[in-house]
Image (cartoon, rainbow, N blue to C red; front, side, top):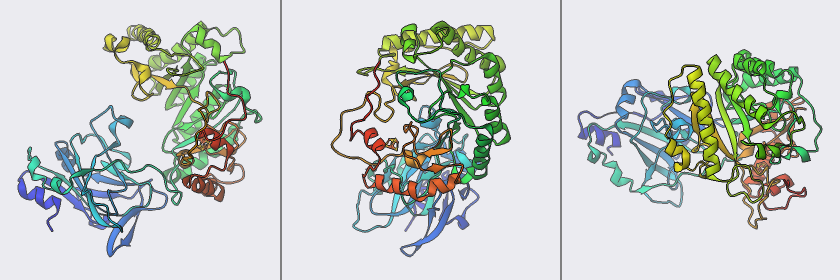
Length: 532
Ligand code: SF4
């Protein structure tokens, strides 16, 4: 049977492509990469050799030669043989020129076409992906141009990548054999596999000098304290050794609860992680303790991402932070936030800055910024500040569309990512929706139907200041205690029986923990919801 590649190449002289059946048959144009979280095994499936991600991996990464990449920019056609009953059970994610797509378009989901036939038993089938915005200039992790993301087990046979020449859409005869567009496959992660950690939280302290209305700090009952610098170092040493296999995939966060700037060794911790261990850090601060010395120290330490949890952009809403230090007025507070921004520009720091402001549109109780006109005023203030910084540091002025900002866009009706707005190079404003902290704040009505699945236990690993490990950032009391990093390794805890049991029961829609039942809205919280 002629493959798609044969058909495409046979029709158009300037078409170009490559195929891969098994990794040993990699061509100079296309290769399956065996690295990081993209390692695979070769197994037999229904009489055919097949590639399947190994237990720890969740991707198959495909590297494409520069020559073929350039041709794919016009149109990329990818045909995949897979084993299954219906449409392919994986997501094909490619590097796109669409910078507005999530993750800057580096992992854009490709539309899958299939034959529309659901079989009684699994068999070898084919799926087709036609991509019109392939980016030949950028690559994903491990240098790949596209990847297949696994959730449950799957098997891949031949992969064909073709760049049809000219505008010969008709040459893609395969389209008629793939009349249906498949929905995006489920993103539930199977409890039978082990995935790399996405987000690692290392809570260096749970002490806080604010008692924000929208945070459970005031009702948290677990003991307060700080992680020793040496304990933090041991954690980073372990993470650096295992990172390639175990994650985290994203920068390490230095909180679960607490204000990290209270820790006297904060700069040392960031420097050790970033410079000694090559582990990026994302630091989230309430900004109240920022000084020029501290901020410069963090930039010099190589901090990757700095989240200024500004949240309350005027004097009235600032009262919801319930600041104990009465000398800290809103004006002083705002100056600290602005100083952190200015020092980044002054020092030309590579650190990415994010100014988070609370979006309470539609909130029945807590009100911070609840109307679009209020949000527009805040945005215009920040743009005016950004312009003063541009003048002071001789930066080329950013061209703001003030009609867009002032009423045209309606920031509060977008989520944090789609509503992200850059005011200076590497400085974004994000409107963050009020978090319910597992239904403790402004909890929802109790639901009747239990949907037990939660992605957190497959993605988050939270180390509290005393070494206790919990499964999600929402569990502020650490009730979902999975072990302690002073007694077991991160891998032992992540793959251990306690965590496996939690994943399996949740997969079966059983929520054994009260914390999860409250969080999922199937049980009322015992604690009163936080009141203003
Ligand atoms: S408390 Fe349970 S249900 Fe809620 S986010 Fe954490 S793991 Fe998921």
